[in-house]
Amino acid sequence: MRRPPYVVPSRHDRVVATAARAIGGPVGRYAAIGTRGLGGVAAALIALGTAMLALGVFQKGHCVAKGWSNPSQFWRACYSDLPVVHVTSGLADRSLPYAGAGSDQPLGSGLVMWLVSLVTPQAGTDVGAQRWVFLTWAALAVLLLAVGVLAGIALLPQDPWHIAHLALTPVLVVLALVSTDLVGIALVLWGWWAWTRGHPVLAGSLMGLAFLIRPYPLVFLLAIALVAWREDRVRAAATALVSAALAALALYLPALLLVGEGILAAPRGWFSAGPGYGALALLPQSFGFTLLTPVPTVISLLGWLAALLVGAWLTFRSLARPDAVRVAAVMLLIVALSAKSLSVQTGLWLLPLLALSAVRWRDHLVWAATEIVHFEATWLHIGFSSDAGKGLPGETYALAIMLRMAGWAWVVWQIWQGPTRHRPGRTALHQESGSDGSCAVEPALR
Image (tube, rainbow, N blue to C red; front, side, top):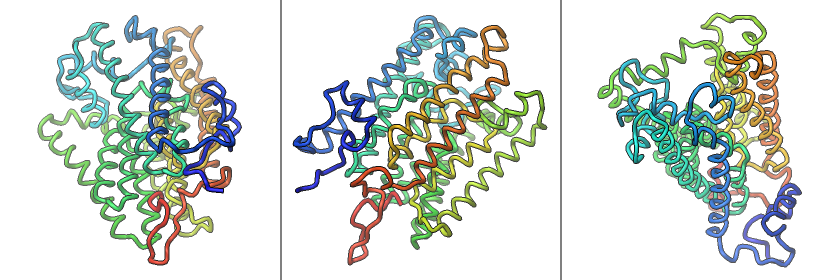
């Protein structure tokens, strides 16, 4: 019997089969698979992902109608960086947000917010301006999600429906519109694709630009470089790393010269700040113990070093000989456990790894549940200072943080179990060399 051109998830995953009843039911035994090619899969995932983002707009409906003001944006869990930063910085005048004392937004995020302010029909500090900024970002988020889906399908042509872990995850509803992280995720996925096609300069450049949104793309790039080094592709790994640094500097240095030291406010603020929301480093403070400011900073930096060392050990010494996806997952977990601040939207950075691995939807939903619980708990804890009767005290919030980290550990363990543990036919993460030394299937995820 001829094998289908790609894996059909409703035939192998009970959660998918159950959920599929809402859109017609699981694929039948005699259905013709792949007659519309990958374009049909991409269109379906983009349409379903758009529906998830629409639910995200609905979830933040109170703020869309009433504006982003304290403390209602916390009680209603509808906070978003874009409308809030817009009215509290130079963005209201369609200027960069780094004038004066600067902004706590990374350079990449600040530039994206500035571009959003340029294309919105209305600027200013009133509710109408906030609403336009948010809805403009929601429309751009649809495009970014579509771009990410296309990159994921290009990476996994034999299992394109697994990119539903990016497009259909419940965390999109609550997290995707909070910040500009979707920009970085789209850049990372296309950077990974460029690496698979033998373009280390482009791969490194895209991940270097993503680094200006959040530091987590460095984890993915280091994992790719480590696995490439193991496979004697040292030159390609070095090229990608150097390209990433040059791409980031090519944007950062001119901005520093033209805008001034305001863009340094974010890194300076990180070094001087204490533990932030979502991090295990906040637990002592939640129970009444205060850490000296340098302590969580040093722990966080050591966490990055530990992530690199553990990633190198897993790559070169482990009997499992893991691919870059699994190495990156473990490294990202270490960085998260040692972080001094782990904002609610950080969970989005696990989505590329879930989409490129063989995780079951059951395990995905377990993790997503912990993310959503933490999302709600964070806003209730922030609101505690304005109304202790409605808010969440530090001790209870600490439990939400630990639950979230347990969810991270659970799903990373499932990723680590290997690409073929749960699902038959999944070969896209394997490297199979032909007689001429070429790679028969998707070598680049290694």
